[in-house]
Image (cartoon, rainbow, N blue to C red):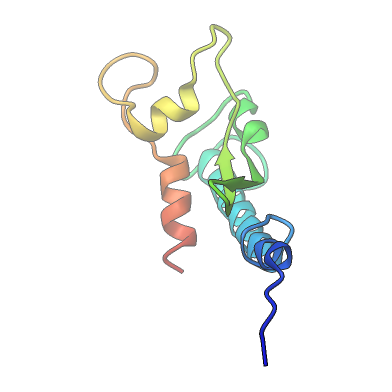
Length: 121
């Protein structure tokens, strides 16, 4: 008796964004993106966010989750392409390093908090 392993099917099953594991990771990624939008905007529109009070809607509109395969593993990439008129990446700045004077000052972890909220449910 022998066992035949279909490597391609196993890879799709466990590592591809198209397999069930990848789809579940994609759903979790989208949940993080929805939570991040709420943190940034206060819900379904912009204005009174839990973490940031965005004014232009760029950050809200730019937050997205994309299914991916990273180093052979199913993943979700979550972030924003929002930048200020001068090209400053304020979303990333406020999430991880915003402190001190200028540019609104003070850390406002809109994405970090979303990750924490989703993965500690």
